[in-house]
Image 1 (cartoon, rainbow over the protein chains, first blue to last red):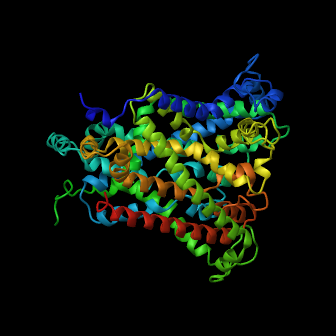
Image 2: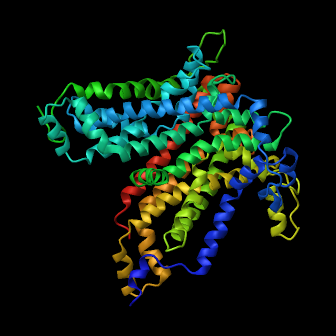
Image 3: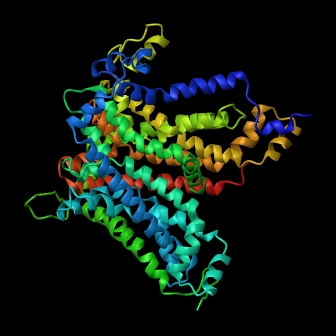
Length: 282
Length: 300
């Protein structure tokens, strides 16, 4: 046996494994600190942040969680974030997949230059349009609504581009068979094309969810009070709220991280693939 | 008629299916961008009773002469100059590590990727605790232990020299998993025969890395570096939450200044001018990427 097959993936020595473990522990430390700290009495979180006790919750209790829910309307923020995020994801999947399909697979006047225009919008980061969008929202009196946090983010050039690329690669036979059976364009899309595009829907859903769940700049600009405020703005406000109780703040953090971490652990493969494919294509 | 060379039959369903998304992009992306250009040539303020005037390049002149904005630009460049190479090299190291036959590879990948799914607002708040001043702060304790007590505890986020590096570190921690996953996919796309051929030619581990791995990763590496550079110019959440641009402008950024102008001081025209300048920088970075990516193929 020569070493040739091993060259592709050298088997690891104990040293590499130890290195991976050390890095992994270092990497997970802030997360562990957050979870452990959320279970400790407030006064001990900061005092023990610099010792091994930061990772050890003696007499763990859920008192901080009860305390956060009593001090602020955390349930409301959670519902706001869920409602806004899920609305953007669901509406976005519908609208952007239809557009991606129409641009990739249907023949109509102007679709080429429209697709070129859509790809041109890809270089435009949200920050470049945040100020006029904020200005318009203020003039129209739409601040502090769900609408203004949902509607502007439904149509998304990058999502259209991902759907477009995916549909371009689908075999044409599927649609032709459906058409021979007399199905209209929309029915063909819904019943034949979309079910074959699940990985692409998953990728777009995950990327949209991550972006919306973590969105901070826009809700900071357009929410004035807790009524429609999502979690990122709420935690930033909560941690400046005197007295600064670190146990409560970390409990707030755990509640905020839980849904997205849960989704990640459930759909890990789709997450990683989604991110990786966007990278390779970009 | 051109008929269906690329696409299916000509149908009115096409425009109808595309319409909702195209309308959304026109109203909420294209129009605001044009509005930013127009606004930046006026003196508009929110809630001002005075009539809006056209002021030509005046906003741009003022913005570029503003020492705080210049500081913001310099800070963005400083952030990019450190974070782009550090994060790219760190991601490459992690990707190479996880590309080996390693017990528990999946678990390690999960660990390194996990912070990517955390909202930056949450990461920022947790790291305020890590950077807590005094010997009991995690970072101070860690550095104290590493230097056997020689480290004098400091207040990282209120220290003009340390505030920016502090923001850089947590940004790398949060973002490196993304780059790692992209590079890992790139590594796995390099054909094994190339390594075998290099081995036959007598290349050692370093030679294989230099002549096979790096050229094979060219495009993913360019992509990763460019995305990180653009993120460096979009830097905002951490700054707003952890330092508010301080101490004394040490961590202010272009977007932080734009929000401070448009939102905190209602000077929307000034904020618009800043975001237009920001957009020009992003376009410049993207143009560099396109050029680099096009030069590919010839090398390697």
